[in-house]
Image 1 (cartoon, helix red, strand yellow):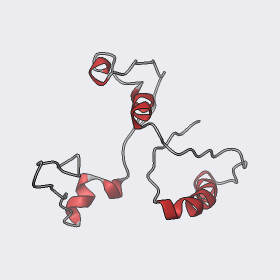
Image 2: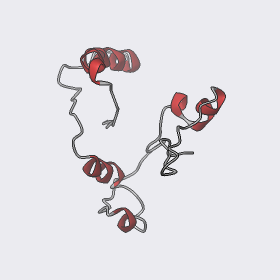
Image 3: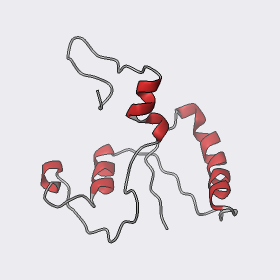
Length: 112
């Protein structure tokens, strides 16, 4: 089994995140994980990340995103998503409103 995450970690919390992650994984799977199980890398190329993560998309739509689709085999369960505490329902529950930039009409929230 493999999991690939793209996670934003504030600069001042990277060390703590790296220290805590193996403990969180062990608590989830029920046993300690070998020291070389978890690998971290900063993301420098967001376009490359997008193409990598989306390479299993429907080949019909891939050219629109300039992605070369690659068969990914059978996916059981959810292929991708976001944490429920970050989703639209959770944000609506706490009254979150995306910040709008008046001069451009641009919004900082893609679901707005």
